[in-house]
Each structure stands twice: as structure tokens, then as C-alpha cells.
Length: 328
Figure (spheres, rainbow, N blue to C red):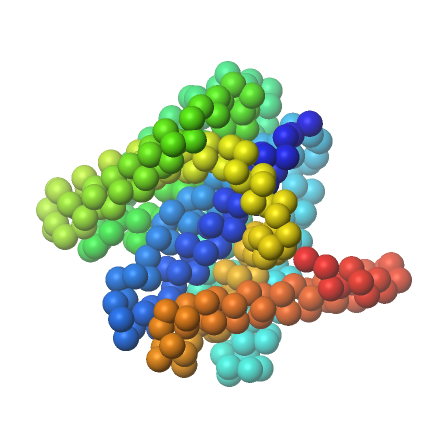
């Protein structure tokens, strides 16, 4: 049985991922101060993929299922929110409604990537389940594929992680999440201050490496590839930090348990709708505008979750369970 610290730790990582990803899209919120503050999205994405790999590996070992059923369960979680929000956005904001927005989600690279990742991970995870010792090789291959793929895309400008390469580079983080799950019992908690220090070093090292290469237009632009190392280590030490007792105490405290768990459970809805809800109307209240806008995003995410629950119950054959519709 998984310890409570591991469960709470994963929820906390999802919470942090939601905050970081949303903050990276807060350009309107920061436009009167410094739009450079709208950052940290790469780390938020990496944390989400890491947790997804950890939990999917756990699920693959827990029960065997065919590939089509595997994909069906995941699309059942993703597609209703995308479909219903496309309809809502068309009605409220006048966005055009097309089959591409409903089926392909062209404005959400993250969702496109994760659907492909789900399909790939099924086979990678099955191989890991059968041949556990191959996981290091599979992780190395996933990193190598990321490195090779960057040379297949046209050389971009600015951060490499904000080009089309982001469709590829996060899969190795997902595989690392699976690897951490497989070796979770052998991973020592160690000292909290050491894990915090290494987490901070990883965080700073990523930005330092990217800063050196992103302004270049020649071969030096590719030096940003080295940032893959601190990005992976950021996820690993983030996991280790959250495995310490402080996280379990925080997540069981009445004041923090509900909001953190609530946000962690709605990462999909928060991501899907935030582009429409983020606004600059409260900028005069900076820095309180950050909390106000993030609160609006979370409240709207909950409404979308309720609408999705009602839609799924309406499409099903079972009797109405209205309380279930209100749950997250």
C-alpha cells in the first residue's frame, strides 16, 4: 500500500503544476508590471507529465487491459471537457466552432501531446511491466529521441522549449515518472534541506542554461539541450521534497487540504479554459489581481467540471445522481 506521504505528495505536485502553468499564461495580468513574470510553464508541464507517468505505471501494474480500453478511459477524461468548453466558448465569447476544435484541440498543444504520449506509454509501460530492468534503457532512448528530434525541426528563436520541440521533449519526463514509481521503495528520503537545495539548483540551472543559448542564432542555440538535465532533476527532487512528512501534514490540515486537493483534481479544466478567463481588468490591484484572476480560473474550472459531470450522466443509462455532479 502506498504511504499517505506519497499520495499527498503527488497531489501537491499536481497543484504546483497547475499554478506554474497558469502563471505562464498570465501575460495580461503582468502587462502593467513585467510580462517576464509570466513564466515557469515548462516546469509546470514537466511536473504534470512526471506525475502522469508515475500514476499510469502504477495503473498498468495494477490491472491489465487492452490498448483500446486504455485509450478509451483516458479520452473519456479528456474529450468531454474539450468538447463542452468549445461549445461554451462559441456561445459566450463568439469563438468559431469547428470539428477541429472539438476533435483535435488545435489551440492546446499540451492535450495533443498527451494523447500521443498515452498511446506510446501503453506499450512502453507494458514492456517495463514485463522486463522491469529495461526501464533505464527505455528512459535513455526517450532522451536520445528528444535530442535527435530537435535537429529535425527548423532552428527556432528564443527558448527551445517554446518551439514545436515541446511536443517531444516531455515524454522522457513521463518515462522518468514511471521509473521513479518502479524504484520508489529504494528512493531514500534523505534530508529535507539537501533535497530542497538540489531542487533549487536544478531550477536555477535550467534558466541559466536556457539564457545562454536562447539569444544565439548559430550552433550555440542548441546548447539549450543541456537544460534537459536540470529539468528532469527538478521533477525528481520535487518528488523527493514532497515525500517528506511536511507535505502530509500540510495536506491534512483543514485550511490547506481542501483548496490544494481541489485545484490538483481540476488540472485539466484549469488548463482548457484559462485562456478565456484570464483578464487584465483587475491590474490596478496588483499583486492581489493574481489571486483574483487565479480564483476566477479555478471557480470556472469547477463549473466546467459540474457541466461535464451532468453531460456524462445524461449520456449514460444509470439514474441521475445529482450529488455526483457536484463532486470534483
